[in-house]
Length: 345
Image (cartoon, rainbow, N blue to C red; front, side, top):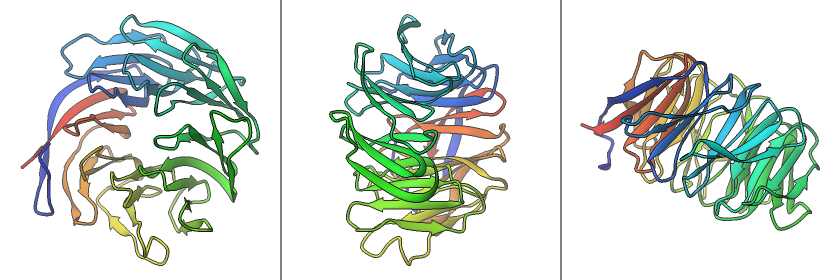
């Protein structure tokens, strides 16, 4: 995709649209760019051809409801986890389950492949379990103060951050003991590593964000959000962190003077609460989606007005960039999955 600058605009060119039977609770683009997986909250999972020209593969998902999806780095396997307390590794070519894993609790929250794809982490209740490529359990981490809300692999490592009440714990796939405990009084809802792995950001139940920066001795707190913060997205240079927690996109700039003591960039155009944020993989465009049924494209730090937008869809649940940054996949609360091309004008 051509680079855009402060004087640019983009348009959203419709590509294709499909329907699931319920709210799109998870949406994931395969690393090779060829497929898009979408899960309905009621359980159904569909794997679409990214061009929209081939009929999707339908997976049974989880009978009590699916909660999360994650592609293996080789793009041939898809992990899912759900309310039946199981995680499943699917062969997307055949639509068959390769491994069915017991998470240790009745409700599975997250399933996430490690950067190398040699370990699958599952989070259910207070338990985090690690599984190898053969579906064998290799670790169980249970030293968490409450139900685990989120997990996040540190880029390029086998270190896994686990968020719950009281902050986060960093574990290694190669050790039974925690590497580090990042304590904070409050309930962590969402974790997001900067792309260089230097900062772990945590969205909180109490309408704040905590930053643990490896270059600084103490964590930092940013507060004043209208509601709890679940939307976090880092840019490719680990310079900007975009956050939700309201109708306005709040962007913090990291560097020698920030973000402590600085004013964030405020990008306001949505008319209802934000639900999802995503930066391009190798570009600078930030996409935002909200309960107002609007998706907007931004260029943080260079322009305060949107580059363009798409309106008239259901309340947006997920937005995901294609690996080549040309397309956006969008899921909504009505069960629609849309793929649109982002075209510079």
